[in-house]
Length: 207
Image (cartoon, rainbow, N blue to C red; front, side, top):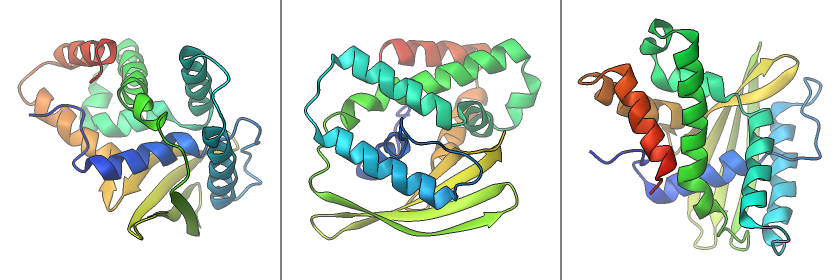
């Protein structure tokens, strides 16, 4: 079994670009803003950042991106949904550790690939949004220079007056559901502590 890999690598790289890319450090993500405006404004600003020469060390740049993403992505909700039913069986300390490791896993495994993105050959299109109460869906797609398209849907939840992303669906594949399947496969034969141990190892030695 190949661990922590999305089923379509190119599609997942597109996901990671948008997942980390739409967050804007100078933009206020309040409830008065439409979810589609949050996605659009943030992605355009980060595209500009990615096209600029790097002026800080790799570590500083990564830390800055992680701090920004942590503010506007609900990683605990993502971790909870990715783990599924076993979440409710865990004590608070283990839930917290799992959520933190899950966030670090996403970042450590894929951020190095995003840093090679130049923003020169892709175009982002914002199709429409659908809001139902405290939940929203924003549909977008990326067009590559080869004229191939990748559809990306954002699932957001209104929390504390702010819209936050809790899942991203690329070409019909849910980010959360993909990891849920991997976690379920491990937990079918191993303990939750064993899963945490695997996560720690993967965070320390990403591939």
